[in-house]
Length: 187
Image (cartoon, rainbow, N blue to C red; front, top):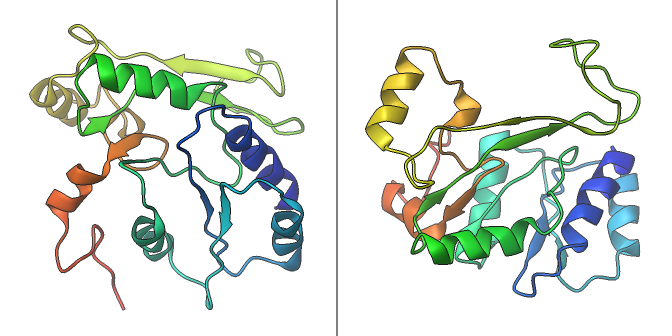
């Protein structure tokens, strides 16, 4: 996993946005991950290695507790940020007066050497595949419309507000915590 992680980490490091905290939730990965992170010289990068393997929700919950920022975004080790994503998000949150859940179109990227079976002949390897647009009113989604369109099957889960691949204001997550956790942790 070190090669995709390096590309993912590089996309975050390239962000010029100053107020950025990059927490790598090393979930007991192999030594290549630790070695890669030890070579990273960016002070914004924090290696948060867990003592034991955690479920995905427990690992994200751990990240929520470690993060200090007002907005949070979780991406996987095989994902990346689009160039200048944080500056764009900052400008948009200012324009829309800092909404709590904040999301936009999701762009899929297919790594070199991988194939997409959705449209086998319609992508170029190693490039952005498609951008899922959202109908909106002045750029803001109507939550009731969103809920109904999801229930009718005209939207998939990636088009809903969430914490993975989206930017969420910490205050929104604080409102839904139960017992200090955003997710119900099953033991």
